[in-house]
Image (cartoon, rainbow, N blue to C red; front, top):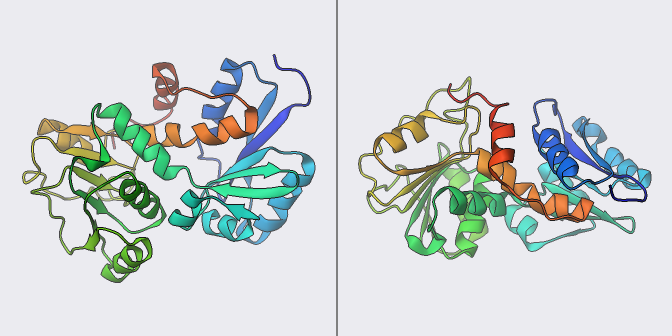
Length: 278
């Protein structure tokens, strides 16, 4: 057990009871023998800024930020790193010397998850198609482009929103009304379609090349209809749980001083808490 004052962190959201981050970080705290705690922090939007400043004064090391606070957190920070600036939102806060530092680890988590579940995959393998234009889409799109994706196409119900995102990110990014799957090396769903309680994502995967990877940011259920369809075609499929696990690594290291690992034991622990099918 590490000596000294207990290290504290948590996750800010409204609501936040559904968050699996306390289970995840609690596992790492126990594994590394750290005197610390990571707790759910339900905070209404109107109270967000005051609550974060109170955590700083209380000696917290930092916090994760989830819906609906990610953009508010960006504005509150004293400084943000390039990942947060590209994503336009913050999901990880680190408190140092009374200052609030922000980053966005969603893109990192996504890339690491694909590399883990589709060994040998690289962002430069070919064009990517991304469904959606919300916060997760922006973080993932930025990460793919920065990692060398040669061409990225956004497809969203609101074309205007997709075009605004493409303009904000810049680079080899386009907008289409239908997903150009025939040459896609990677297909990513960042919409809520396929999530428990939502309609399935109705998309014919037949045009995808045999080498393509299909990834879903949804992790409730673990096996979405999209991923089931991809596996049925013999394609490599990447579930949303990996992104959740990997995005947590940088924050844990910053707050608790140990570099955590994502392994089979951790995945099994979290998977047991998530429905496997809709």
